[in-house]
Amino acid sequence: MIRSFLPFAIVLLLMVAGGCRHRPAPAPPQNVIILLPNEDGSSSGSLVVFNHAGSQQLTNAYSKVKVTHADTPPSTPVQVDPAEIQRLFGETLALLPQAEVRFNLYFEFGGTVLTRDSQAELPRILEAYRRRKSTDVTIIGHTDTVGDSQTNYQLGLQRAEQISHEMLAQGVRAADVFIESHGKNDLLVPTLDNVEEPRNRRVEVIVR
Image (cartoon, rainbow, N blue to C red):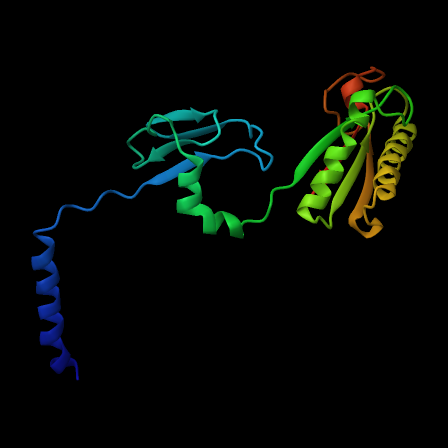
């Protein structure tokens, strides 16, 4: 059996080798990195692409760089037509799970009263919940560093419960909501103890 297959294998190799002599060298493999916007079209921040030879920073949505070799720096960023991205990667993007959406709601000092701007933010959270058909909304209460740890834990929990009640009243299912409190142990803005910092008096809402 082995001897009968050997001539055929040799001919195949010769044919492939002979054919390759007349073909152009294949293009080197390359990685393409594209910075996409958030689902709502807002900026998703920036991205630094680097290797041993150099780096490039992507700051605009739909900007692209190519990396072809470890000894060649990433290419200069160029803008890509969103329609072209959809044509090339639409099927793949459709299979990806949606990224979670995060919101910060801020409170007046010492209680569970939302600031006016944060009260106006609630409809956006509800819209995200309904549009994504979410089954997982995590609500995390936070405080600044004024007061002791136990008091702030309870205050953070009360703030999370307050937002939960408001969302349930607007039709969010109780089974989809999970609340917790970090008190003063997870500061958005690091401060010393007993410092009033409005940005730390918040509830973080994560819609998955």
